[in-house]
Amino acid sequence: MSHHMIELKNVSFKYPQGNEVIKDISFRITHGESVGLIGANGAGKSTLLMLLSGLLIPTNGDIIIGETKLTKKTLKYIRQRIGYCFQNPDDQLFMNTVYDDVAFGPRNYGIDEIEIEKRVDKALERVGALHLKNKFSYKLSGGEKRMVSIATVLSMEPDILLMDEPSSFLDPGARRRLINILNSFEHTKIIATHDLDLVLETCKRTILLKNGKIVFDGNTKDILTDKKLLEECGLELPFCLQTIDKPSLMFSLCKSPVNGFQKGISHKL
Amino acid sequence: MSKLNYSLRQIRFLDECSEGKSLIHRINPIVKILVTLIYIICVVSLEGYEVNRLIPFFLYPVIIISLSDIPIAPLLKRTVISLPFILGIGFLNLLIERNLHGLLIFLSLLIKSILTVLSSLLLIATTGMDNIAKGLLALKVPKIFVLQLMMTYKYILIFTEELITSVNAYELRSSEGGISLKFAGNILGRFFLRVYDRAKNIYNSMILRGFNGEFNIGKKISFANKDIIFLILWIIYFVLIMFFDVVKFFELILGVVT
Image 1 (cartoon, rainbow over the protein chains, first blue to last red):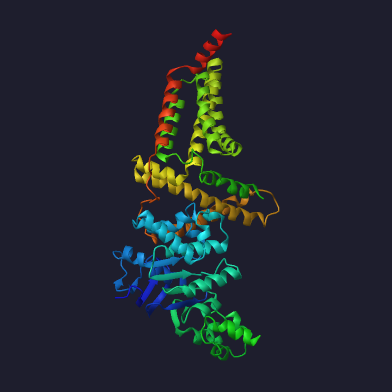
Image 2: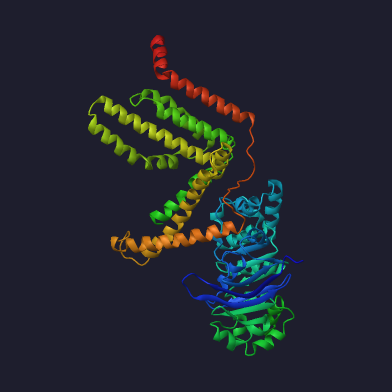
């Protein structure tokens, strides 16, 4: 059995006294897949992530994480398996020090303090923030906060990572470090973002949402080079493809979405 | 920097102080809570007009401040913030009792409030809220109260951040200094909505990391010899100054000597 698998079967969600924001969505994400979730504002990306983490319960359909169906009874177990990074890292950093913030999750699961210290060190090291361990969380820069917020999730050793706009609040340097870190993770990942260049570099598969429905689910290359479809859904080509006449041709120059694009662009220049 | 921004920088002062490594910082939080509690009880239980007997109680904050390397000026500034309320009550009493007795009660009230507020601030500045919570739990204070205390303290900081964002946004588009009464309602309304959203997000991030109403705060508290000595010495001192008029005693000695 794989804890890393996510399956949605005809999932719909409606806010009380509101419109249906997620409409009959079905997909399956397998072990280790990295999936970009894109769409215009209000397309339903954040709601979908909240449904996957059990913060919201679908009005219809089933969500299966690993082999476990998401219900109120299984929430505790499923949340242990899922790491959710909020759009605003400040929402995840509410303790005094970085150490206490990263240790917050494992402490709630009754892990002993020696093991917690190991986990904190490991998680911070993974995101290159071990030197921040004893710093005050509120004194960190935007980039540092983002890295620490990812560490707060990694310390729980989840199987699946859900990330809501991970590149927001980041300068280009911090964003590049984030991309490298995301590419080094072996977790199953869903990255909801407007940063299509980030999707290009971190996700082989992309799901495009429009008005709560899946418009496209497939290879990142196919969707992110389809200017017409992207524009129909309130998006545009990734910046690195905007000056190129034939984006799909450009993509084919690349061996992998991660390194290939850098090579391709430098070739073009 | 606007006054509010400055206040926010200052609001973390106690948290920052609590990360010190002095002897007082290293004392067991349970012991510090107990000593502070006994101190406050002793101070408030003296008679209203016994101003001279309050003087020996100044030794406690003086020693704690000098041993913990906490800057005194910001601490006193915070103590003074609480004074207007006490002064108000004291003045009301002066209106009723317009004699020496009324004045003594007023002075006693003033000193007592300074001492109790200062000792509480010193407890937070040398222990930190997380350790205080840990100590309270160890002292069998019901979890619900400790959780409320922790949450209130943490949310005050978050609310202040949100308030600054709202006020800054207003001030950047306003030619007048301060907030006009005309817009105060709108700003307050928006502020509460923002704070509600923020609180919801933080709560969500807590429950997603396994929070179930129990605040688990780090390593267990251990006792060392220095903790016991600290506790015993202060209890002896408090008992001494509670039951013996030390000031009068020194006056007598000085009288005999001279």
